Image (cartoon, rainbow, N blue to C red; front, side, top):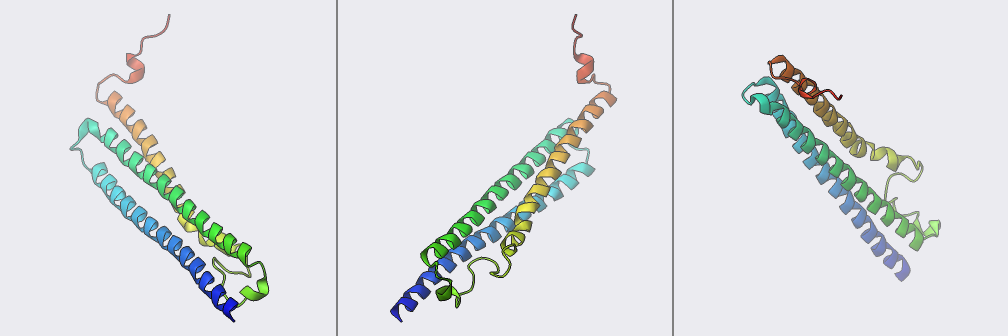
Amino acid sequence: MKEDHDMKDIYERYAKKVQQENDLIHHRMVWFVTLQSFLFTSLALFTNGTFFGDLRGWIFFGFAGIGAASAAFTLISVASAYDAMRDTRDQWHKGYPDESKCKEYPALMGGVANAALPKRGRMLAQALPCVVICFWLGVAFLSSIASENSSSADGTPSREATEKPEE
């Protein structure tokens, strides 16, 4: 009886650790979405205006850099939290390998019947930052093309025109 009580206390500690990591993922994703929302809005506002003139290209690069960096850091931190959750689950199973004693407790992560559920459950938290990184890299690329085209269209020589040919 005492062993069952100790096992329950230990299980609750492990479950609390997994829940804590899950909460960290939630908070990181909320901050990620909030920052990206502000960046998308700012990008839209700067796209419509001509106030900044020659600085617009650099501002777009700044948005793209901040957006891509925050997405990459979010991806890394979410992956770290999932690793910590997986390690906690594995420690629980190492400490209590006898499945007959553990059946009364729910799985620490995902469903027991389908091993793919934990992987599918984290797909959004790991795929969304990747998609956003690609978006911001596209913005940076298009911004560089647009800034080169605008410099040649307004009469200032483009980079190719100012380079001296090799002899």
